[in-house]
Image (cartoon, rainbow, N blue to C red):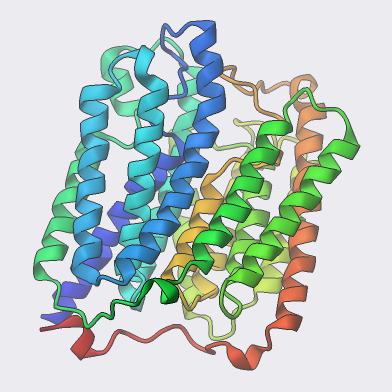
Length: 434
């Protein structure tokens, strides 16, 4: 019976994380392909990143709160969030006049779903692997379909139904699976701490790092040409990431620092364009995740260095910033494998710490906004992307180097003997069954 419960938790956590990731990284619609006015498009350009950042913070808040109330409460909270996502798409987001409101509602529900599913799935290894695989898959799918939506503005109603993320049918499926998980899960022995004992550190850490990343991304636009301003904001992001890492227990902040570096690297690389290219990217993502879980000795410093190397590849490799090039496919595969390894290798004491790292991956960074072109597709000609692409790559290199230095500081301040040497074992039988 326990084996079936583990399989169900793994499937439910993975699909819930995928739905949440797609809802946050593409909070329903960027306004491209609609009849939105210039004012509406401008409002959406501003509100979409803010909505994503708000949803990422809510994910950490949800993970902290529902973890104290047990698995059944976590799964039930995820059911409610998934139903809100489906309802929002069906009833609210059909009019372009309400897209900004729908984006915020989608992001808040997606954040609660991500945090609640994480609080339940990250208790032991099989569901944790499914949750991480689903969350990272949702991020990659969201970036891919965001690009397709931007390049196909005149979509029919049927085509838009397939482009919208997350799809309603998948959100409903997630709600059904989470409801089954809530029904069959065992009673968990939980404590109900007083207000003084509430673990607010992950929430404060999320507010610090995600707010700083969001503000920096908003201030640094394609029109920003001052390297002084860019450097100042990058230093602020690295400082916020280090503060967040120090607020988290032990070396939990290592994953947050890796996430900041990885997100910047991803912003410097082109997303894969053709649908068939998603298959090798997702396969390598899974391989990287399983390699991180199964290899006995995690190497987060090596992963951070590899992230910097991938940013250098984006800067130097011809075609790495063009959607249709083979270099872009190679960069996407390397990025997927590195992201999978990082999240699989670095274990955390708190589920909220892993949820925070996933939230950081979802928030657009300065490396992405420096070359953002709105609803215009990224052109395949070098003249259109060389300047912005180079700035994005240099930004990713700078953020990666800063996060690597911050990681070394964290490792020096937090001795390894204080950290668990192996991933958390399965939860005791008494905590998972009646």
